[in-house]
Every structure is written in C-alpha cells, then in structure tokens.
Amino acid sequence: MFIIFTRPMYLFFILVIPLIIFFHIISITLSKRKAIKFANFDAISRVQGSDVFSKNLTLLYIHLAVVLLIVLSVSGTSLVASVEATDQSFVLAIDASRSMSATDIAPTRMEVAKVAAKDFLKMMPPQTRIGVLSFSGTTYIEQDMTNDEYLVRSAIENINIKNVGGTDFLSMFAAATNMLRDEETKNVILISDGSANLNDIQTINDYLQKNRVVVYSLGVGTSEGGSDSSGGEFKLSEDTLNIISENSGGKYYNINNLEDFYSSFNEILSLSKKNIVFDLSLYLMIGALLLFVIEFILMNTRFRTLP
Image 1 (cartoon, helix red, strand yellow):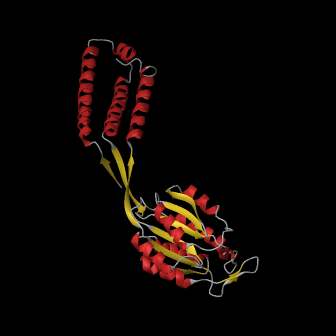
Image 2 (cartoon, rainbow, N blue to C red; image 1 turned 90 degrees about the horizontal axis):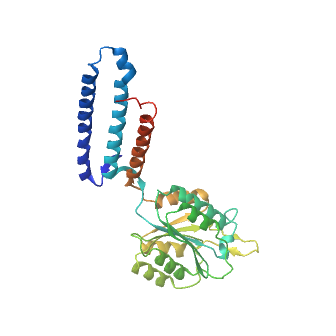
Image 3 (cartoon, rainbow, N blue to C red; image 1 turned 135 degrees about the vertical axis):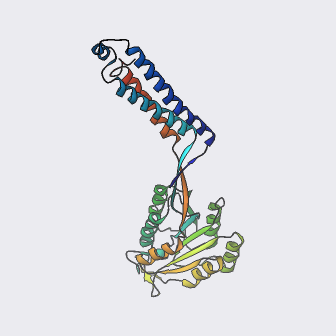
C-alpha cells in the first residue's frame, strides 16, 4: 500500500506552509512588542487573554492543516492498494435442460449447480466481470457482463428447468462469445451433464477455436445416472464435455457433489495481485472545508478576543 499523486506539479504549493509559520511568528512578535508598553500585566491578561499564545498555536495548526489538505487534494492524492484480483472474465453457462432435474446429486443436479455457482461469486476477487446464461434447446441470457455481484446472484437464482427440448451447445457458445466480445479474455464455465443432442461436436470445436473461447466444463452427475420426478433416466455424458474443453484449451471436471464444485472453481480461478487506486482528493477537500468551518466557529466564539 502506498501513496501516489496524479497531479504532482501542485505539490509546489506546499511551500506556502513555511511562509504561514514565518508570518505567524512575526505577528506574535509584533503583538508582544505592543503589549510590553503596558505596565500593568493584569491589564494585558484582560485585554489579550491569559492563554493568547496557546490560542494562536491552535489557530496556526488549523491553518496549516487546511492548507496541507487543499494542496494534497488538488495534487490528486491517491492510495494504491495491492489486492487479489483477476484479469479474466467469465460467462457462467448453466444447463437448464430436463436432464438437470435428475436426483443422483441431491436434491437435483440443477439445485446443486445453482448453490455452487452462487458460492463461486464469493471466491471471485473484487471487480471480476461475470455474465450468466442458461440453455436447453434455446439459450437465455440471464445477465450480461457485469461486476455487480447482486445482479449475478439474482440471475443464477432465477434459473429454472426449461420446457424447450434438447441441449443446443452451439447456440449457447455463440451467445456466450457475443457476451464476451469486449472482454480481454474469453472464458466459459459450462455447468452441464453433457447430454448434447443438437449440433456436431466438431462444428462446436471449430467455432470455439476460431473465436478463442476457453471452456471449463463441469460435468454434473454420476456415472450411474439418475432419474427425474417423471421417472426419466439420465446419465452423465463426460465424453462430450471433455472433448469440448480439451480442444478449447480448457479443462474438464467431474462433479459428483458440492465439494467437487468448490475444488474445481478454486483451480479455475487464476488469482494474481493487482493494484487498485483509490482517489482521496474529494475526502481531503471535505476535510479542509470542515476544518475551515471549525476555525470560523472558534474565531467567533472562544477565540474572538484574539488580537
């Protein structure tokens, strides 16, 4: 953590401070010379106050503080703090097809995926940009790219199983790529059971490579599979997810429980130190104004007898 000045040329005005001290000393000296003409020092006390010197010092300190705060403010004083951050952006792509209602991961694949996705936000460094979409036979953009955790969390909570049949990976990746168009890095975290039945896998791989999209696939479900409330049986299709991730430069993770989610998220996140700049100019100027008000009050109340 350290201090920087975005407009350092104005620091020159800090030389006003020794001038203020110099003229203050001259003022006190002249006041003493005038006071020495009085023979009755009790009269001096009544005229100037017995603690005139301490009052003068108090006002001097306030003057110096006001000048210093103003100079630091106009000089663009900023605090630089080193925090955990990532320069990566992510789209959370959550499978909302019927197979995600299977109960081999209790209570359902979908509910566990949503809980893990929301907890993933807590692992994210500040200001990480995230988008959310859900997909089945149709893709739905739940939340465009943002660094607002509340909006992302709300978008995840609102995802439900879709009635549209099929799992259209290609359309989903096209939507995710469009969401990431202005981002420096293009990462998709695909949470799915891999039951893709639309589009050719090679077409998907070609599209991802052409657009330089990296896919981290989280295969949700057990090898034994599970059934939904209507009795439909759904198994995890790892091969599809593994091929997509490997060809895009990402990685595949098998998810059998909530802990698997957390370990995979920790591995995906590549954390690094990043300098965050906090501009203090406004706060310094407010401090100077408050001190000015305090000085005005003192001059018109307690210190009004000062010469």
